Length: 221
Ligand code: MG
View 1 (tube, protein in one colour):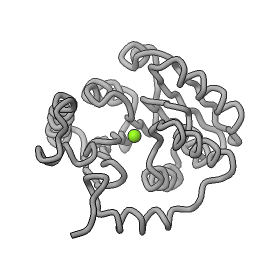
View 2 (spheres, rainbow, N blue to C red):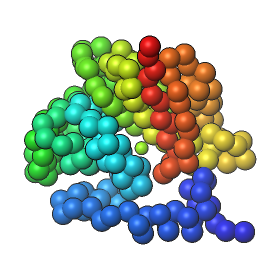
View 3 (tube, rainbow, N blue to C red):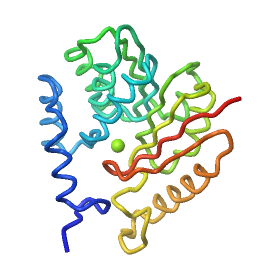
């Protein structure tokens, strides 16, 4: 039996896929090394690659991200946007937000403006107006339902909302993997996904990519 250290997909599959994700450009590699060294969670390479492809295919220009961390994912998205664009990204930890602002200043090579908003997403979201083509949820896992409701107001037909880390190291899918202190988060995530797949006006697919992503597209007449 093969090892499954991410709780989702056997290691040999993860390794195989990651060896085939293109290497990041200079600058982003510096941030990857920093994240690795300091244990900062950044977007999984295969999730980043998937988003880059989606951004190009759907010609995404405007993105809302909840959970900036050190600005790595925002820079990945900015690289993928063709021409001018705009990214609003929200970070609750002041130190991370400051680092993100500095990283964006140093490494943004695109025509995309990236605004880092510091604060609790539930305070910042009501101050934003949108519209956005894509919303990426990658923050406190217990509030995805509330973030999603805001995101819904900001996107139009065919807009897409991507929720990251929804399988949460496999814990969402089986009690066997649940760590005691994560019980509440897991319960909230399960409730979120159960409601999400039933949500009217949306189509959703849950994919075992990275730590699990839920991709929801807004329907319309
Ligand atoms: Mg994530």
